[in-house]
Image (cartoon, rainbow, N blue to C red; front, side, top):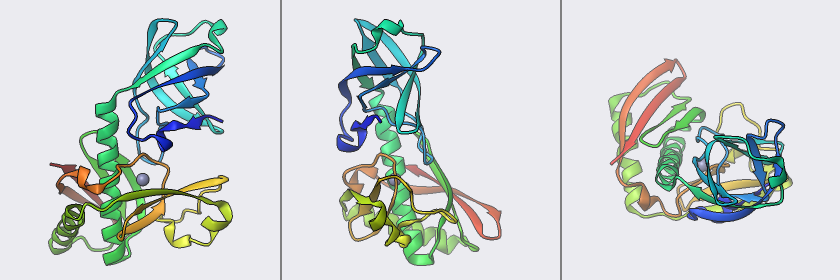
Amino acid sequence: MTEKYFYTEPYARDFEAEIVAFDPTGLAIALDKTLFFAVGGGQPGDLGLLTIEGEDYTVEDVYAADGTIWHKLDRALPAEFKGKGALGKLDWERRYAHMRHHTALHVLNGVAYNDFGALVSGAQVYADRARIDFTMDDLAPQRIERLERECNEAIAKALRVIPREVTLAEAAEMPELVRTVNAMPPQTAKIRTIEIEGLDRQFCGGTHLANISEIGRLKIAGTRSKGKMNKRIEIVLE
Ligand SMILES: [Zn+2]
């Protein structure tokens, strides 16, 4: 089980860790703890560098399997490096862009849920944009305008973003925190909830800003109907 340092220190850019496992190819390694977010929930995995025994290795992909986070490197490491130290350095500009766009989707999700009861049927974050699919039958221009205006009003209030961990039993008592349509509450021992003070609270395993003021101005760049009850909204940040 890898310690998810990106949860306890979401603004840290570099870290020291120990190599604890190799996959059979030697191309992917696991560390005792990591700042590298593993791809999931519509957020890409982090990129960056690991320096091991004085040499830089590029982290090309980061994925999780059974609680272990694997860092795929640009070339194989000698197996005797197990137990050695590694210095990690994130591509911070990219990760911070993911945090901004991901947190912006929470704001939009919170507003759309509060106004229209919209649930999420899909979402994808990029470094320069994001999209989210809602269970809504109507995306008339007045609704788009209202969503965008209310998102920016919330951002102007500089609301704090508060992560919390709850137990499985506690999570079972909070079904309204599941915002993905047809999804169950997560089934891990500790479950993260992300609250935007006074606006929204939901289960989420991504990385987030500490305050929504860091989002900047949210602009709805496009919409698309993906079905009668499935509407896509694309956002950019200015
Ligand atoms: Zn999230």
